[in-house]
Image (cartoon, rainbow, N blue to C red; front, top):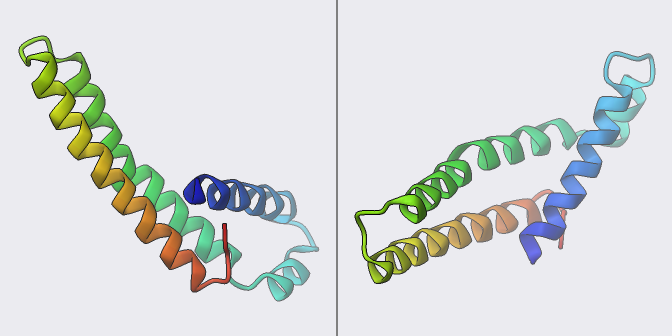
Length: 101
């Protein structure tokens, strides 16, 4: 839940950033929001990196017909726990940028 709330804030931040990118208002925006680009890039690297890989692995296991239902459940549970740890670390890192859930 905390990750989802922060994710929504960062998506709003990214939408605002892209709306002024390449315009004469960009300088003013960056002066008011000096860390937005860094936060957006950090978020994108998390979501498109480690979280994506964990989600893909979980989906591969879910589709695997060679595993028993119990083995699938156990493997997916471990991957979901890893996803939760990654998300928790991200939430903690965002507190350094004063972005709270």
